[in-house]
Image (cartoon, rainbow, N blue to C red; front, side, top):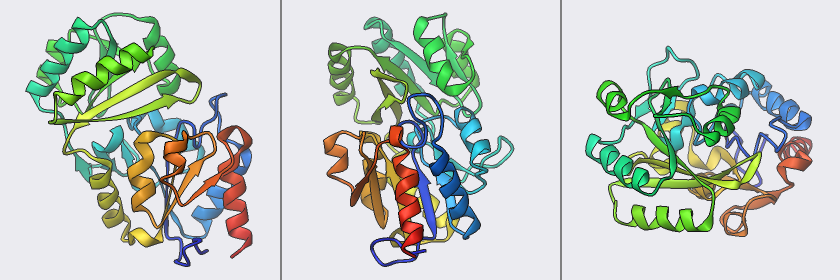
Length: 278
């Protein structure tokens, strides 16, 4: 199978929310079928998501994914499976975590701390229930000081419910060059903006290169698909960057091509046409 750039398609990396998973929380049937066809033809198929590894377990199982994936917005690259050793793992520095906790608590924003295998809040919150619907697991409740003492923190996620909260978050991040933030909306809650904060060393550019090395492919031989601002590095770096029609215009402009929306099973239809043209 060939990409539109004329190079063979050897690896494909897919975002999850708004790309694979629609507003009903499901993967379109054509998308599922066509990704299976990719796997059968020998294409390496991986995920590239802001979700934690455990929060992608159902997608991994549904699509039978066994190739290297990126999680935590670039802080973790690994083979699926909790027992696998990471190919890349970058945690936040302790001082950075303390600064973020203090600032977000002062601003009364809802946020979560993530280790590789678990995520944490200090008390119950309505947004915790909402986010648990994506990750299929409710966060553990523990004092953050204990969490930090016992776990490397790969990511901090804040859920922003208004433009004012987004503005406050961006202002905070502008004063913290040692961290990186990728913003994305949940597939089933487009009124919530998630701020996925990782170490500045845990970039998607770095993760993309780690995936290429793990899959033994060149950038020109890869397909990357996404719908959010956070996906732009992959769309730019891949041999062919495909944006969803439900992506913001700024994201679409960074892609080589735009397919139908996730609600229309747009990715599956695009893959089907690509396979037919081979």
